[in-house]
Image 1 (cartoon, helix red, strand yellow):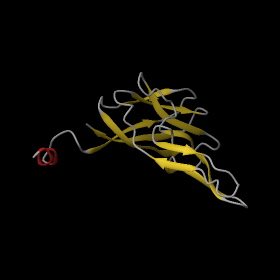
Image 2: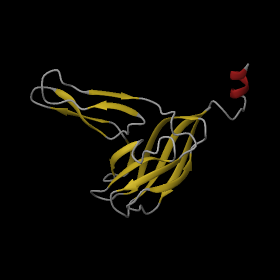
Image 3: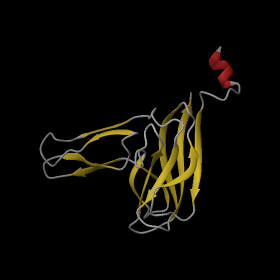
Image 4: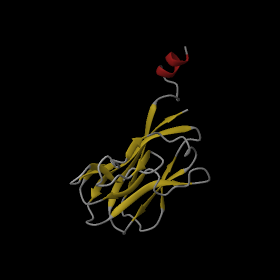
Length: 158
């Protein structure tokens, strides 16, 4: 019965999204204006680059008492291409092994252990949801001022 009620207009249980426009990024941790619901599970976070800025990167995370991780959702996303940019593991093909070499998806949304160009050392990458950021403000930290982008956070409110 609760599922039917939720499907017929209840405010909980649906996947939701919040969006914030950053029209001219600051080179310091800055709140986006997004505050997550107190009880929520963050499923994903990403950006849509509006104004490209060569060489600039951005971190997306949280400020608050629980998770307080300024790059917990996205870590070092490049702002060099317009469009949607999502954090992920970087796969490198070496002479001895193809392996996970780095990760731009933050620690709140992934588990990561870098591999190396040594046989059987591929590393580990697993995406996960985050239940520690409820009630916190979503922040961005740009490496330089100037770029414009939208920040998206996908979550389920419990």
